[in-house]
Image 1 (cartoon, rainbow, N blue to C red):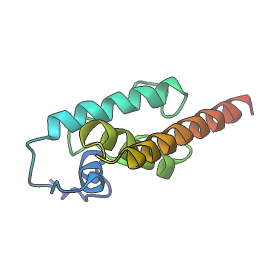
Image 2: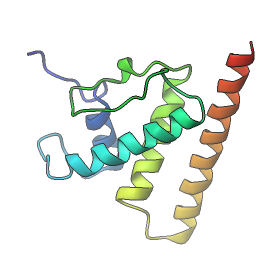
Image 3: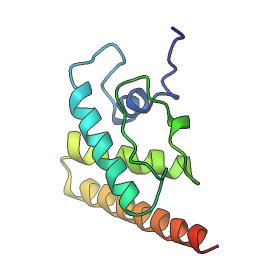
Length: 119
């Protein structure tokens, strides 16, 4: 089996972004997988991603499998939502900044998705 690169794997890249979790530490993988899949559900509800419900099953699920128009915005949104659930900032100003950015990205992704559907 080919080695999975951190940037290709949804789970491994989220682990890297939230900080403090290396690839070998799998203790929180189930928790993170649940938070990631919940975030994909939210994205589907705003019209982002493939027509079929998207879920990761582990580190082998790759970003390239998630078909969308702005993958980099989705990656940032995923990071923010998982970070806020798994390891929220202790500072209320930082918490508000994360929430504001996540809300903005969700809105922009949803609007752009509607514009693409409307032609």
